[in-house]
Image 1 (cartoon, one colour):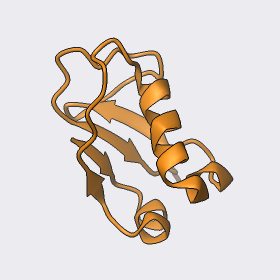
Image 2: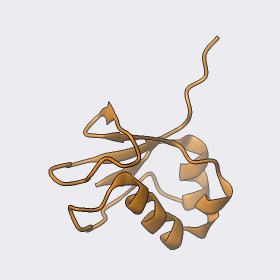
Image 3: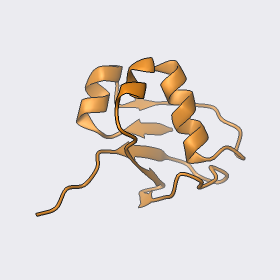
Length: 78
């Protein structure tokens, strides 16, 4: 399951989660590209942070064995 956790992205896509069947050899970058093809509005946004199974992950993280992917808004500090 893919979760779009960024409120601004959810608003533009119209949903906060989507079930996506993907090849387990795909990485997060490939999944994001798939989502952008499904929802072209995403191409106008900066790339969000990514997580697999509730842990931040790099964009080249393979999806094999991952049960849940999430795309999160950038974190700001202060």
